[in-house]
Length: 542
Image 1 (tube, rainbow, N blue to C red):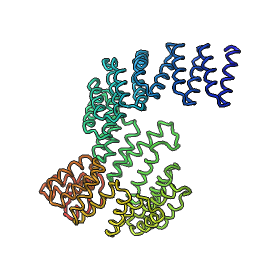
Image 2 (cartoon, rainbow, N blue to C red):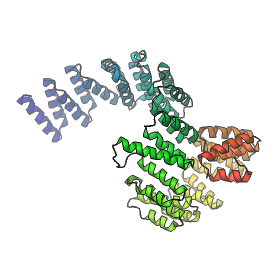
Image 3 (cartoon, helix red, strand yellow):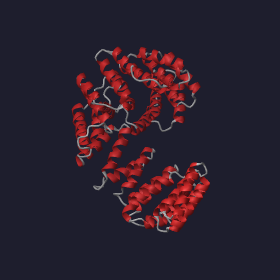
Image 4 (cartoon, rainbow, N blue to C red):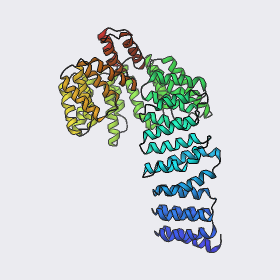
């Protein structure tokens, strides 16, 4: 760098500090052109971007590319700026050039970058079209077709073209049945409620070369959808094939604990802890997932009434973010030992300077009271909080649900109608009120109308579908009830939905099928109140 260039750069930086980015940009860019220095071109571009001058940033990036035609950094920066400016058609040729210059082994990573960048474009539909056009050569390459289709599918998904994204995932897996990228796209499409996507994931997992991360993602999706038995099955396969991976052991142990398989849960969680600590060379600092592991071990100890061991596991948790949850678990342990007041004091002693912290403490105390069936105290607490914040819809809803537990149906209905008047688009309020009427077998026409309104507001909610199936059963429409409940249970095999479906099947004479559903529901949650009440009333023993 000559003295003259050094002086120009120095003046450019001082000018920027004094609040004149335009002059600074000009000086730095002029120096960059004369020296062909990539760092100066980069700096000129940064100054333009900081001053929100997209055209100037593009001019600097193109000047860089003109001065150093082989610079991939210049070309990639130009692409990013063009996408940010929504000048998408201009990106086709530079993107093709960048793909041609990228070694084959690096292209899958580049495909992910392309998908991420173009998904941020303002005109996402045009972005999807441009990416497909730019990747036309890669789609013809057997080694690159799968990640290329996955990139196209991700941009289509960002454009809310779920059908187009499904088509891309399908074509990607046809090009390479072991292609991880289209399989991960199919997993995301499962989350977007695309029915066909799960079939693509299963086909991928049948391949011996299937990446274990995809099976783990599938197991998570199944657990999220409360398909616990299927999730456990996938995790069992994963832990057998890759016993050294920690994460599957954590989710498997959590599901086993939920199913009251305490010995198996403890074994799985301790395996997770040992593998995690081994991977970090014995460093016992808090790690991702460790808090969940200690919670599960505390829960299994609580099940066998070993409260000292349960507290011992909680004592290992050293995470400020999980303080409220940890103290709530401690409070539950105290309540189980007949020390409810001490448990409530433990929650009230939590830090609570901000409104959000105060709310967390309130809801934790309410949860403690509800879990220990002290419904009147929970109701009074919610009523007091709701009086102080009369427009808080969540408080009104929670108070209504506790009123139902107290059999104060008039209060529940009053609160829910108040919530509907306040929030006419609150599907949970319509559903709760309609279900309550149907469950008590009263005002069934009104119950059906309320639940149908909830369906209109949330057509894909399986719990609202459960309410609709239940009201049809109460109205004597057993065939329609069975159809609705079967679909709801397939979408979300929740114990409460299973309880209702089982009763409809039992009543219609399909007792073996009912028993199978109830047995599956018991494995998911043996303590579910609706399920237990149903089995007791029908004198059924799955």
